[in-house]
Length: 180
Image 1 (cartoon, rainbow, N blue to C red):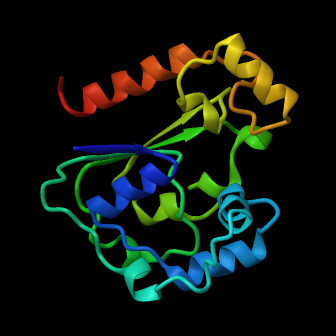
Image 2: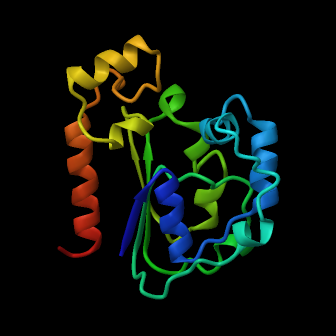
Image 3: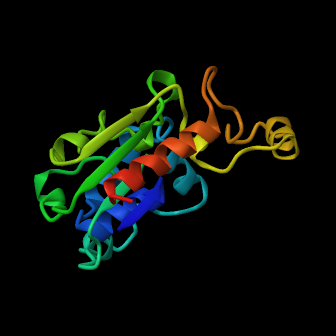
């Protein structure tokens, strides 16, 4: 079993058999540089996405020990096709955090078309929620400096959401999938 969140969600999918599309991800970042947080973060951090080794990026990282995959708001899921997902045959759960303006474009497996490429996946959409709600509970000591620095909305949860309840829901889903 493998579970992961965001880039870790992609790692989990890759371990389950999904292969990346370097050219497709580069194009996604060209098309959505200002609206895709993962592209913005990588490029803003000095990563030359186009200059990455395409063969290594697109290689198979499938791990035969993986018997189940749970990916929460996975990244790198844009511009893939059926050939990229064909080897993902293990039971799979995709979990989307948020809807509408609270849904992160970089991890939106519905808008990217990724969900349609894995028709065997169980899909759970949690709203109200946002991407960063999967991170640990926030304290005022964490929220205050983030707000003062206008940093990522790590501790700014949508109205009506409950971070602890979201964590419990994801734990319960994984436990049920594994018959625990």
